[in-house]
Image (cartoon, rainbow, N blue to C red; front, side, top):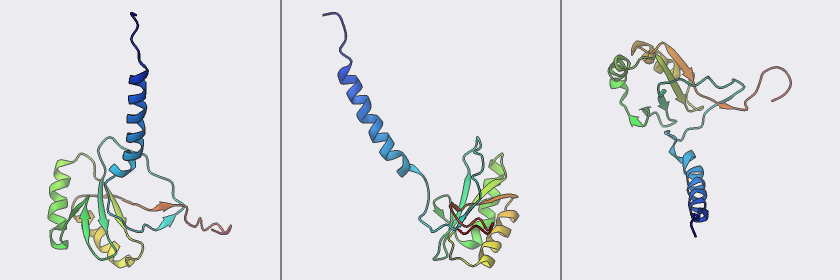
Length: 133
């Protein structure tokens, strides 16, 4: 018999595909917070990995997944901004945080060199067009 039997190879590939499909959603970087819901559409993706600042309900600040004291936020952001080509940053804030606290952190982001701030929310929120929601 001169033919190669590819059936075991296909079985292994299908098993690996299922494993990656299950594991891929778990690879996303983030801290569990309750994002507010809005009717806004998602922003288009970019070439460079987006930088995210997370504000948790218990008052912690995280750059990506690294906890950062408030006093060190602007110096760290300035150092990060010097190494990046984009001035875009995403702010993930728990919905229970007062707006004044979010505005303070937005000011620190601006002072750290990031002028293009995107607020991260969950979709499916009220549209405010009078049609319920």
